[in-house]
Image (cartoon, rainbow, N blue to C red; front, top):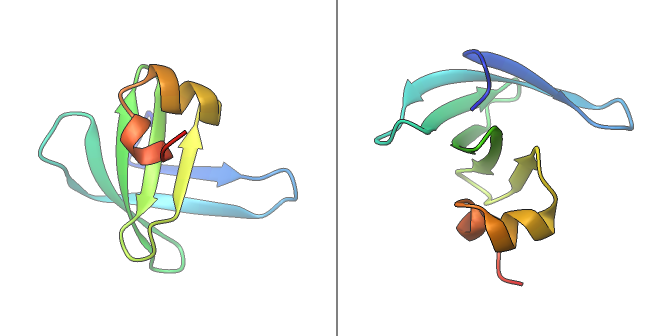
Length: 83
């Protein structure tokens, strides 16, 4: 999980988004966040990494591991899609 209730992700091209926690999830490693454009995201953490899934369009962002690691050796495999 991110270390705070608000965090910023920045991509190599300089584009960035800030995510603010709006409520807790049912499990300890789950939270719900809004981005600066109003998008709603579910965050699930695993072993220092996390995945964000946009609740409207299904877009997914994985932070702290490769796509292969996410699919094959984490509890976030369902967020990362089939191999």
